[in-house]
Length: 271
Image 1 (cartoon, rainbow, N blue to C red):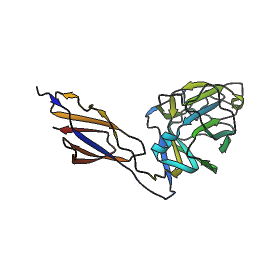
Image 2 (image 1 turned 180 degrees about the horizontal axis):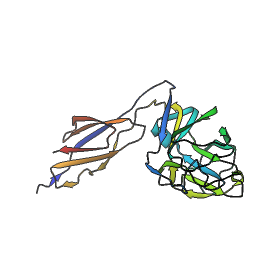
Image 3 (image 1 turned 60 degrees about the vertical axis):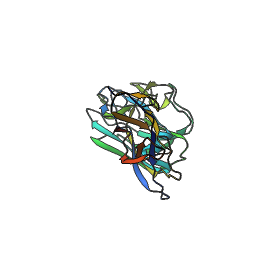
Image 4 (image 1 turned 90 degrees about the vertical axis):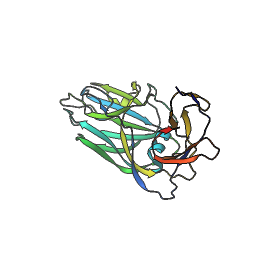
């Protein structure tokens, strides 16, 4: 078995896009393919209880990595896998708020929320449900965003939630209150979750003015001993919103160009 010392010059260049145009783009945060059940959460659309308040936190880094930048947000959308037996929701409202919170707590944040969408007896449909804002919400590009959704008490029948695609985030990004008698609009606390509904914002594209940082090598470590004639390279973003990578690989200070790898973050190289 060959055992080779990894003593090489490795350069993984991050590629960026530089633009001064203030284009409006659709950006999606969350790519999970799991959905809540008819009685489960999180979901922005639900009548398993008579009313609810659902909050989601989206961070600056998530928004920027998805391609969003400071400026007006014109709409948001959620992807419904199945409406199920969801009933119309009275005085359905969506509000936005900027925040310094990096994770949600069990207490709904106080302060000024901006109502961007309202519709009485709103009922979602299968597929993308786009909520166009009455007035664009101006995002400062530096604060995290809370999306706050609430309804009034249903006077009639109620039974199921709509199933919406969500992603496990790894941090407390979702907060929910639901009740059959007390008004959700008066709720001060709720139940936390790390699962958060996937969302699509229509907003200003991120304005990249500086080149992205070099990629960071994850594996293998420089100086490590290898027992295979193949090297499996793994790297991560070094920051600065890269949109792709070019690989240079070799045993000299001026390594040879290998390939334009697009958005990939792994590559097998034969020694």
